[in-house]
Image (cartoon, rainbow, N blue to C red; front, side, top):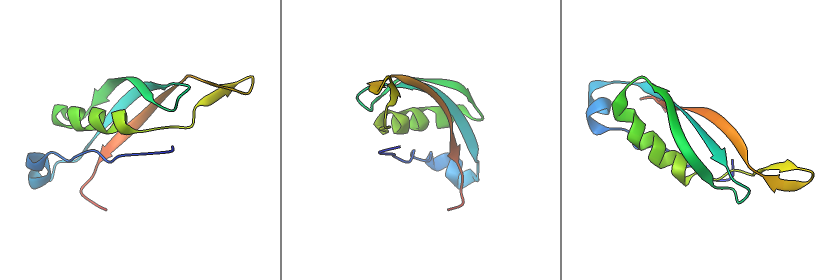
Amino acid sequence: MLKSAAPGYPKELRAEGVTGVVNISFTVDAHELVKEPTVENATNEAFISPALKAVAQWKFKPGKIDGQPAEMKLSLPIYFSLEG
């Protein structure tokens, strides 16, 4: 990963001590950008929007085919934890 952004934690969930995870799949294009992020599942719907906003800011080193940058598909969990 070349650039990451932490998701914002919904204030009401932080205050209530709620933790969770959002699993997101997306494509990294040949220019390092995230495209078409979609939610596979989430433990709490309130975490979805912050997770998608964070992933949209990420940049990855693209995959390569025959030495040339190419799109690749990824699926990653975004954790919302009160620790750390």
